[in-house]
Length: 151
Image (tube, rainbow, N blue to C red; front, top):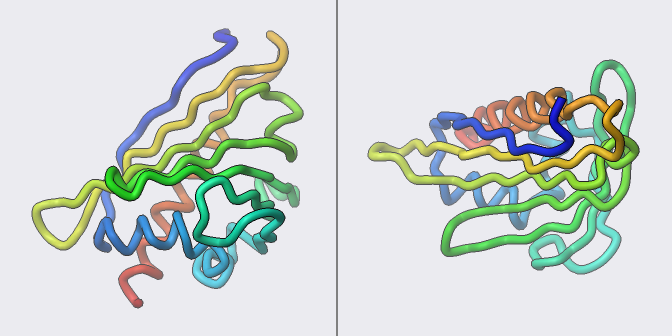
């Protein structure tokens, strides 16, 4: 088993890249209303909702367990990329590094593709690879599309 790695996948979306990027970069406070079955609340600890480097905690349920993910956000408006750098929470109990990246690339029609990648490094050889977190992230992005199409 590898001690570190990168997972990557493409998630096709019907909503525009601009709307998706805005929701994930600067409108996180609206996420629980849009995908409340996955994300139950987000608390801002430092910075503003739309500021680079802001620190937030996300409350969510994974495998029937309520968990918290505390992160520092980085944004690149030109590339429409958002990076969530984990700094605390259950994911960090087993990992030294967990960075979730979302890049929204406009399609030829109104839709877009979200390039999802997760960079990770385990704390110990016995720690499991974070595949369930990658699947959860993919589901969040895909489920947000329905909400984006209604706005």
